Figure 1: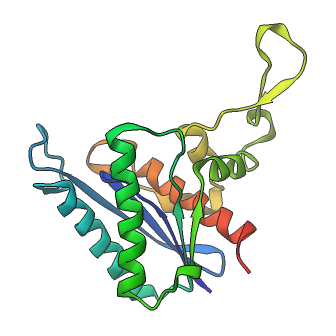
Figure 2: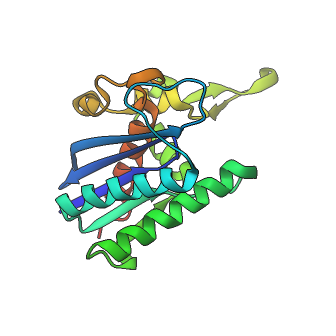
Length: 196
């Protein structure tokens, strides 16, 4: 069964194609504004956010068309986000879904939204046991679950799948490492918890 998991953003959208629960292909689509002070190699620059969103949708439409997945999972919207970035991400999220629905054979019930909190909580269980918790503050007895940051999300990816982010970094012309790892955990979460 083919599945595509997506971690979407205007600057870097990562997508992973899965076959029977195993990642088989990774793509990162990078966009930027033409008015940006610095133009990084490998980033497509556009006049407007609308053009950036259109480009991302075209790339994902091509990927989905080439692989014909049965399902697609995407990072859900964060309820804590506010401001212009939150509106951009919401616009991107719904435009991607509509683009894939209208441009492929996928039906609405084949799209899944995985909250960032669910993906992070799921990934925590794959960390070495000693990294899963931290001592409680102020000398209280016991431990708390560690807050999953980008570095821990990367560290949690099993060695057997480390190829998915090989060659990528957190920033610069090889940026996409954190986005790929988010797409990875979105896909793994879907396979473990929602695959029927």
